[in-house]
Length: 191
View 1: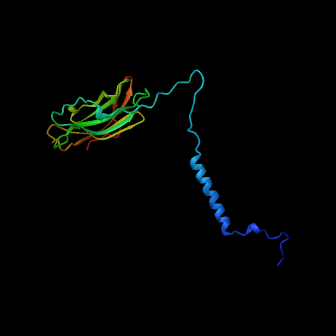
View 2: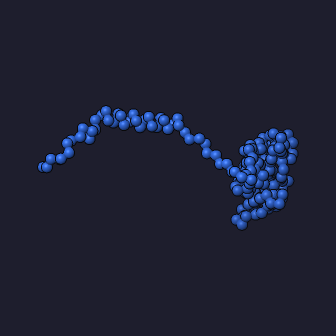
View 3: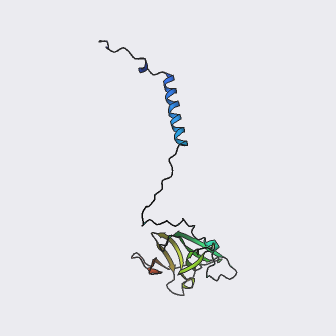
């Protein structure tokens, strides 16, 4: 066996004190990183085309709205809601599905779009997408990319009991030319 020309180095043998020192240094780095965080990122536009972004607004709360729904002594039930900027003005709207609290059957739903006027805290209905007079119920409601989609349940004739809708229809609404335009997606079909 040939001997090494370099003398044996003392630090090449690990001892428990080396592991303790390494663990302590690592713990100090982790603790320091928890206290030292970078500032929040901000984007700033400069020049004549720079516009100030509108402050983030709170979506309208359907619990504070008055709906054009006559429930008599029964109360109004908010079934579903979704919020987003539907008309591109930078302020969110809320799409709400409401119905009367009926004891039995399938009460018809109304689908309403709410907005909160400037300087007010009370939301108001700005559009009726589904009128309860149409005897439709809403099974699903989604809002994605300023498009509202819903699955509507209805009846093929007045003879069908209100407990058992026998027709389903998919509907889609988008804000175009100052109003909500309804279309039916290609996958719509009856039950």
